[in-house]
Length: 234
Image 1 (cartoon, helix red, strand yellow):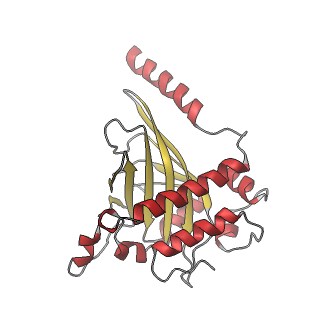
Image 2: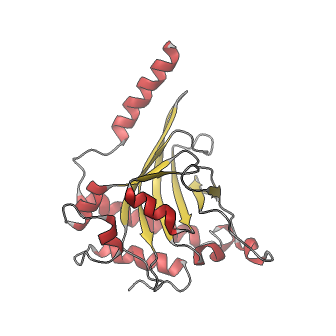
């Protein structure tokens, strides 16, 4: 019992150090958006190891979490900040909605301290649930480790049956990852800071109602559009 309590205390201290506080600035959100763009472009730059184009073409939304942190010993913890972009009926990608991901039961590469995570949403249901509060991956939405590479494109009658497919990149390795039990929620403070608009909602961002945006928002939209077929950034 004492060992478990000690582990919980250590985990609480670590997470208190890595989880952002109210002192966050818009500069941090700008850098996060730039990092998300870099992560996606680097992943898609090597077709043999990238997310299959057939899956990207079907994406309704994409979450990119650069450098998710891993902390804890007996009791593990995971925490990360990232962005969610949503595709509309005209196949255009939205500006980024900032999100957080937390959970203690993530599959992980052994020894990894920080890992880039990408989630590909094939359904709007999970996205709507995030906007309404949060979702728990695997419980509120079916999730699976995503297939990798061009060989998937050659499969006959390829189908992607899960609602969400998950990927990770750590120490140069890129592969599907299991993230059951992790929760995704909107980071309202980050959105207000990034768009300089107190109380901005994710729905307003997705509908394009925030007209004054940092240049990095358009750059990220363009990067996602280039990674998906038929996805304009305008």
